[in-house]
Image: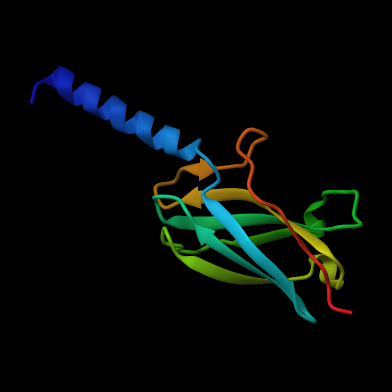
Length: 132
């Protein structure tokens, strides 16, 4: 293979990787339920590369401030394969049982690429109501 062909192939592969990272939301939030001590989020991985780390915003519906205490729900050391449906369980933000809004904050793929939602490429948002 000629050196120019190798350079061109490398550039094409790098562009495809970046384009995939900037694509539509790789995570489909399917459902959210409230338990007495936690929220349970079910999602499907619709991307092409396994997910290594996943972070959601878990914000109480009545909260105006987006402070760290108000809710980061994380899977730090995960391995979610494409096409799979998964369930994660998180304690209520601040430990208080109340309605919560869950949205995707960031997705880190196994290859190190990080995807974040934008206005042009949003992800579904779940509103989870606490049981009475």
